Length: 132
Image 1 (tube, rainbow, N blue to C red):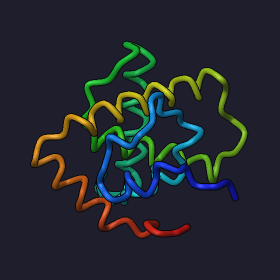
Image 2 (image 1 turned 90 degrees about the vertical axis):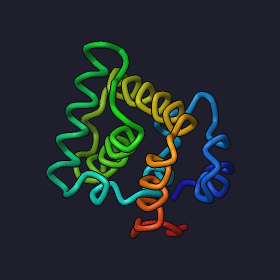
Image 3 (image 1 turned 135 degrees about the horizontal axis):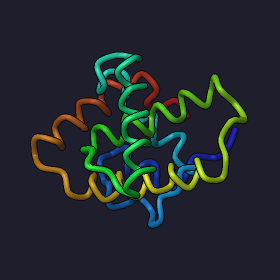
Image 4 (image 1 turned 180 degrees about the vertical axis):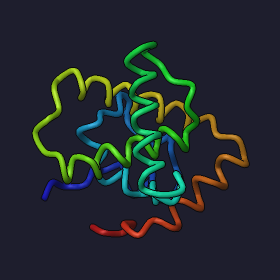
């Protein structure tokens, strides 16, 4: 098991300014699980759809109009998916996920109060919080 990043406790406490720049996908396994991504999406199937749609938009446009909630669901699902589908990611896929992480970091720093409340609730509901 890899060591959790040093910045994770601050982020788990809600300090998104502690997220590093750049935020690289390979370092986000624990971060991704700070939320209940399935709950944020509505269910497993919807999380998969959000993942597919966000990554598709990133591939086409090199950016995304997705909210912080949707980006975090996509990040969450990327790690849950990897648990079951090992070895199919290319360097291009990881670069795409790195862009996802950069956008998520940016959006988390710009949350509205309503978005912040939604993210805080998802963090509180995560069945994986405190797993380390």
